[in-house]
Length: 393
Image (cartoon, rainbow, N blue to C red; front, side):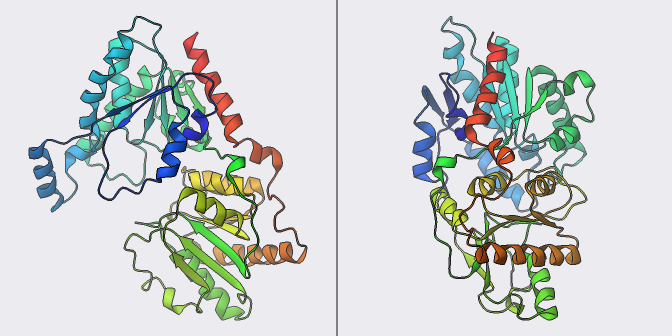
């Protein structure tokens, strides 16, 4: 969102957590860039009471504590933020427009409390679904509690912002039309000026940038590559697939990594944001991999970064938001639950990358210009500012 807010010609005050985890993976350079345009910044300490920390450690030995699902483990930040922001509303000026970003969904509970106290204009932004998130394992108690929280936010916020139409369809299906009318799409964005001009690598290189974890694994790619190798052993010569990021303790050996030809798939460590953009533009092609599902409403922000890089994209992703966008771009789509479809998409994708090399159009931007432009931060920022100004009148 820093990319979008940087284009908003309004004074912006940011409230964020004032702590650093021991395993903090923040990109310090990116942090400085994303704060440089702010009018002011308020860092509110995020602390857990010692007794609660102890209770959480004990409970985690059995499973995730239920209170960390109400709606998440950031909820205790709420009272500190509400108290610290009182000074803004006590200045006697016009009420600010408040925007809350979830996840964590606790941010929306903060917005809800501020709305109740001060009745200011409020936009609630959802990067993921809340109760409809298929990766959330709510029990009866936590599901009903979160449904109540979500409904209160939907009813009280003036605008509901989502990253795709598919997410709106999923989330708002259980609400009346009057609430759905509040929902609009504000997509992820990219900054064209951040991408360097790159030289092509020696081999045809396809990269996935990001972490693999849980049900999202490289196995669908491994399976398809093994099938291709058996049918046409020489087809994959001179091709390299790179994973840049953490595998989060996934057992890639069990998934077939050792059954692949040497250096066909390379695993690399995480890199800085700027380095990731360099790796995108120096790749022949870029790859999205999602967890198996009947339908996915998730729009990976990394896919929008890929669009900014202007390289051909293949998605091993279920039907839904990401696959629809990749097809609109003219890309290739497999399915993590369908080995044959994934294999066919990979073969066609690699053939296309070879053709680009033969035609020497490596640095020519790929994808319809008008579609790519719709995700540029300048255009998304202007639309976001319009939504804010409509509420501030």
